[in-house]
Image (cartoon, rainbow over the protein chains, first blue to last red):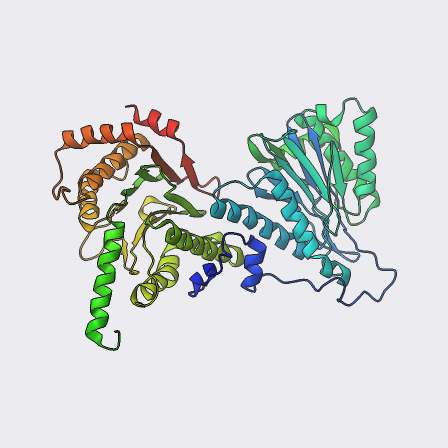
Length: 273
Length: 259
């Protein structure tokens, strides 16, 4: 801990600073080069990759958020137990597609931002405030995206009893634009397949997504991720040999539940495998 | 003035007297370790006096709201940046108080041309086990008192803070005699309100300097509770969630109190 602590309040900046600004003031958070000034990527064919698949949809019990476990670098699989579905606070989940280092750091900043706001301002940050905070982190990161070293395309799900609807779901683009969705969202390289499945299920499936029970929702999530993995090499799907299952979390009025692997395995065995 | 050592000592003494006068009417704050956590209690809800600092650290304060705010903000910033760069487990109340807050308070107090902090703070940090709980009082001159065992005292499971030394000491005397660490929440709540009453009775020019009889404390507690709002918060010992701080609402407190 720094010993020079109390320099903060001389210009009354303490109360109005948000957490990322505090970190930057202390040199603890990298500032991305300005998108206007930073060096451009030489390779014209370069496309920012978000090699993964994450998805989320609203169902009867709240919002389900799921992500596969594979982490890749180019066409090498570097890790098969990555956790891309992260708890930010008691009622918020962020799922990440993109460069892991940047994404995990972003999640960490976000988590601390919400706590910091509540502790300093003595009130909970609003849903809009939380959604916007992530948007600003993405925007601040855009210089790194242009350099090809830090693209992140997250999904954000939260549950707030005082808002209407109570379950809220957003996806973002790499520049920080936020899009609220009514039913489902999917990002990452495997997302086209997932979007197809979720769209089909929602409109012509046995039930609309919003009417699914927990087991039915888990079934759809597993089938969708497995389908994405079928054509997308960067998506792990379900690893049948090593018994590695996607991470699935549910956010509802009671907070966040991480589904135990046993339960996911049982649903998989019954209705997917 | 401060060229002469004697004048400096005199200036410091005057300043201490001035601050003591300003703090003298502060409503006492009690922090009590019980079976399931640490309970913070105070009365008189004109403004908030109990605050969350970090996952396992809470603070109660008396003094000037502006000064309390500066210290509170500094404590939160220090704890949050430490928790972010290292981990929540690396945020420690001992380090926060000894290495950061205390030196700053002492410097402000002794630089006689600048303004001192008109504040007195009581911190508590919940440990994995009850014997790891830390209670720490930080005064306007940077002086630190903790609950840990030393040559003068055995380890205590509580912390007390009040407007005057006499009041604080009486509260500590009362708690040392009455409090047992395995207390239930209901028992801890009643006891902390009694301790608050003892502290309150000791304030002012006509304040008592000996422990009042038990029935007087109880009668006085009930009387005060009718007139004032209770502010209370707990640090929960359960390790299911990282953030242990929780404010109790008035209804929750009154129903636990049962009177």
